[in-house]
Image (cartoon, rainbow, N blue to C red; front, side):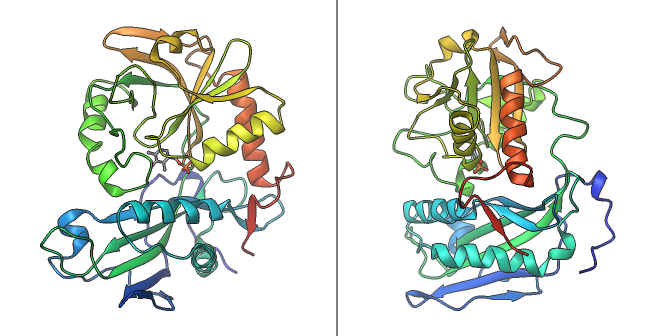
Amino acid sequence: MEKKNLDWENMGFSYMQTDKRYVANYKDGKWDDGALIDDANIVMNECAGVLQYSQSVFEGLKAYTTEDGHIVTFRPDLNASRMVDSAKRLEMPPFPEDRFVDAVAQVVKANAAYVPPYGSGATLYIRPYMFGINPVIGVKPADEYQFRIFATPVGPYFKGGAKPITICVSDFDRAAPHGTGHIKAGLNYAMSLHAIVTAHANGFDENMYLDSATRTKVEETGGANFIFVTKDNKVVTPHSSTILPSITRRSIMYVAEHYLGLEVEERDVYFDEVKDFAECGLCGTAAVISPVGKVVNHGEEICFPSGMEKMGPVTQKLYDTLTGIQMGHIEAPEGWIKVIE
Ligand SMILES: *Cc1c(COP(=O)(O)O)cnc(C)c1O
């Protein structure tokens, strides 16, 4: 297969239209067979449920080339099951998990020419999503849905290595108790836009959201989960029913325990103890781990001992081990790597 002539080394994180996308329609109580199509545009009624009441959920994962030349994806079964959870919470019909995994493979195969070569740092970002498409004006779930997957090549998240970032404690809340913080829904992002634009305007890279009920516990950022490393090398991640269960974070906790032999804890993390941690990182598909060097809470600065120049040593080990597993240098746990071709 001939690769597209793209500048793999210098790609940004933006949308580029690729050749094929997958679409399946839900109507009269069932999903149709689904197919790969060429048209990147969607025509829908002006009153479509997604346009009026934001009934939509999504996922994000990557396909990439391993050292031995295979195109693979990382734990797509977890994206499939998470999307089922998201869909149920918004009263949408779940897309079957086995069909989700198969459709991801179809889209990657059909766009294999856009999968960046090994070593470029770039990847093919895959975006499954689903939305209510029939007209809805009285507030209720749609009757008809579309499930789609497109793929777009994206550059390495950090050009020239991961520099620690500075984040601020947000005055806005991300998720309410018993709300929708634990599902991957566009609505959670719509309402986070004002908070992130405000953070950027104030010179910060990201927001740290605290639990909205008590404002005492660390939750997550707008799109990544936290890990912290204690001074005695324990890896700690916040436990909360209102954070999105990151697949990257779950994988990192597994790697910490089973590959690096570190103690791990998933528990309440109070903001008051953040100053005592040695390292901090943000986990998500896009960057794997972004190191955090500094947290600012209304002028009060917490500077982690790992500093502003590079990742902390434990974070670096976690990063190297997980990316080593993804790229095929380190043996993966059973079922983590799905070879597409
Ligand atoms: C997608 C997402 C994450 C990261 O999840 P991954 O599965 O690791 O990509 C974290 N937080 C939020 C709010 C998200 O939407």
